Image 1 (cartoon, rainbow, N blue to C red):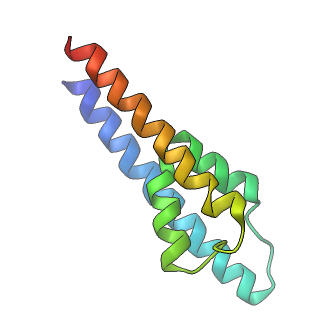
Image 2 (image 1 turned 90 degrees about the vertical axis):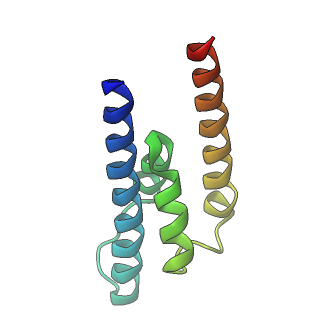
Length: 93
């Protein structure tokens, strides 16, 4: 049970990071400042921060015209959801 707790804490933190990164990058874009790379944003989604990235993307209206993000992040989320459903199914049987 402890491993589930660790996983939940990890997912909370990485999603918070994804959300914050989207907000920070949007703010920097408005100011013309140094930006967070697209690869960093996408890697954050891949390693578990997809929900936070997606929420930040639409809340801050950032990267919403780039199909790499509007299609890519939901696809990443769907693949992660399928993986976790399969994992929990295998573990429970």
